[in-house]
Length: 164
Image (cartoon, rainbow, N blue to C red; front, side):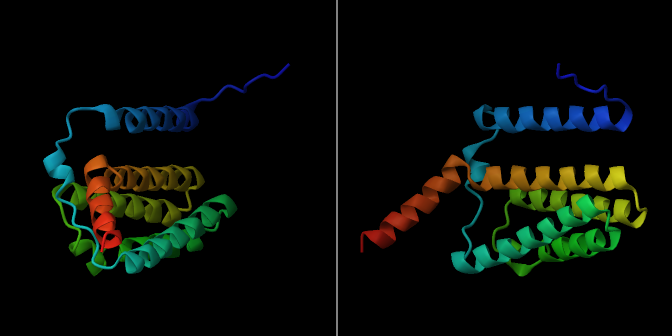
């Protein structure tokens, strides 16, 4: 018979945080609290291919951080978190500025700094928690960017190009 092992301490806190984050992520799109006006403030990047390449660099750095977390390679985690933090201060973000986007970026930088502090302290549980926080900031920002009002503006632009 399959039996789950009991969890406690930090492990139960991490599980609870992950569950809360999942519920918030699922419920947020249905909430009426986010105004379309705020979502519409995001400006589309001037060059989508450049943005895709840029985001691929952030993803690669995040993947290296995950590798560091899984191997206990704190130096790799520190290098990756520094790279992600530097990338989030890149000029491309200035072109997409909105109050929500600025907050999402600040949350991301805070998460990379926490991950770096935990790696510097060589805290295995701390880097696991830090990577989870980092992942949640990515998911939240991408959910914002994929919001219906932003997606519709993107669709309108591509239809205009296709209609020419």
